Length: 83
Image (tube, rainbow, N blue to C red; front, side, top):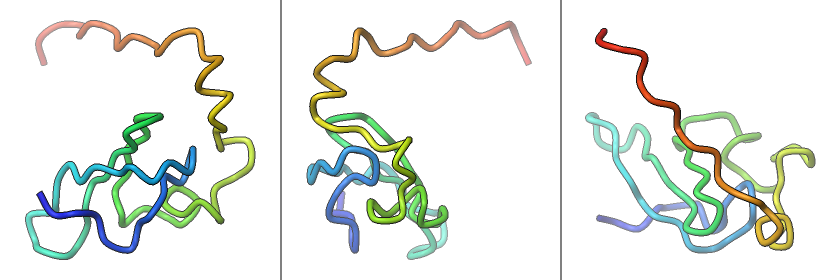
């Protein structure tokens, strides 16, 4: 897959290791990126507060020591049944 463009660090933890996960069906409209360290995932068409480190709210930001001290990643609950 191609490397993410115009995104050099994770907006949440500032890690430079980003993975391109998916692209929009219409080329160039949006991409889905994921951070290799904190696993934060975002679509490039979201607002700057979710896609750019400098616009990310302080309370949402993570530091390397925050991640090292994390007890566990919350589990995804089971599905409730058939839809």
